[in-house]
Length: 198
Image 1: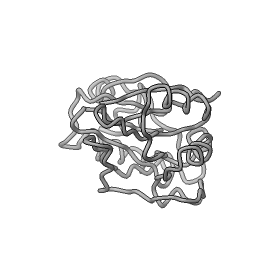
Image 2 (image 1 turned 90 degrees about the vertical axis):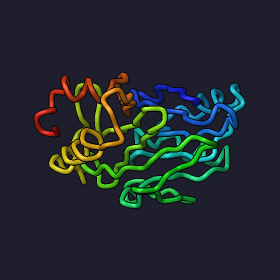
Image 3 (image 1 turned 120 degrees about the vertical axis):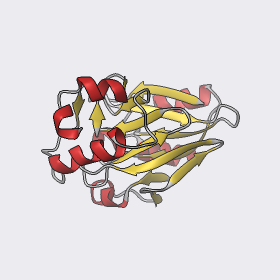
Image 4 (image 1 turned 135 degrees about the vertical axis):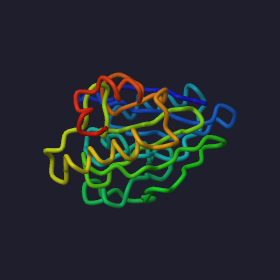
């Protein structure tokens, strides 16, 4: 497995590069800025990007996406309910239960509305990793006061798609859109919103 992370704008958005160690194929998750730095990281490591994935459409997660698409000539992937927010061209829509194959690695798409209408999670069951975008953070959750946000839907997304998902155990890494990494077990016991999503 390849797993790289970069903080890519003034909002401290985490951009992730995930892929197959053997083929060097990778996807770029939430390229919110710093496209030249992301390009350098990828080219210095001789990686082969095959797609850009946006967990949702807010600008701090999409700011570098178009420049990377044009540089690498690869598709952009996001949930169709985010198109009103993003509106990029050359888009491949993804939603649950789609599976994105990156060499021998797989990312399972899980719909997680609440922070935005078409937010998604990306789960690598084999590697025990879940990319949560702005759905779930270390100790907190994504905001729901933006247009299209819904607190009840967000709590349900965390409850059903993460905490009660039979494929996700407490030792899964939580790789969020902001802040540091966590685990599902830590969030189950320590998150300040746990009473609402358990």
